[in-house]
View 1: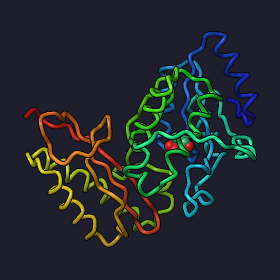
View 2: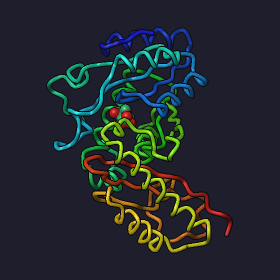
View 3: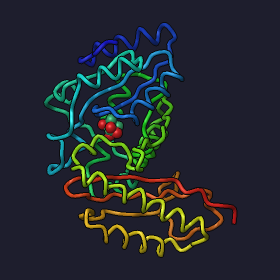
View 4: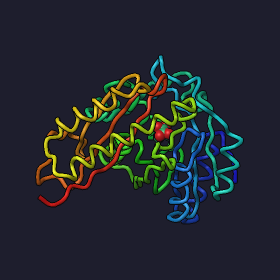
Length: 288
Ligand code: PAF
């Protein structure tokens, strides 16, 4: 496994691999790898001849009061894990290498980046799409892998790739969870032991919504009220940014279950103490 820090060097290597006819897979990450990332790497290993991961904590996707500085980093552990999984290359640039001192271009997928998490993190998705497009241009892969825990991110990246006629397939991998249901996230590191135990309320509430819908409840405003009540009653939940039902493809808000929907995304962002956690599930709707 090779660690590449320079953009030009990375492009050169990718060009040589593509000339040999290799199929390249890219797993973009911000490091501090967990089972969710490992699963994406395994998917890429199955589909592709050569697998790149990128490790780059991207300042452009953090707001001024967010956790860019404190975001967990552990390149030693990450490279050992990646090597064990058979990753071929880690692209590991510095902020200076990626943005220089005169970076002016922003790529933005309009409306989709302003709803759900975008309402609370106004520059976040523009920062994500900008860096992801840069990564796609640097590691010219045929397939790129993203986790469903960041469902909105995955939809936005798919939309960017389609709108900009990009020759890359966006593949999504499932959310990995701890045995108690807590979705794996690098940010779980911020939680105290007590908070970590109580953070399962998020997944429990998503399942509560699922059960109500499976039991025939069609009024999603009612489901939302009940779920929000449950979240707000939990003393570890400092605040709820949102809990919403959305179309799984367009992310349009859904207020009522009707025969047009085969599946519905239930997604939420909550603050457990000082940590913002997101999670979602897809609810399959029975034939009406
Ligand atoms: O999901 C992430 O870890 C990041 O948002 C990504 C896609 C690597 C872009 O920085």
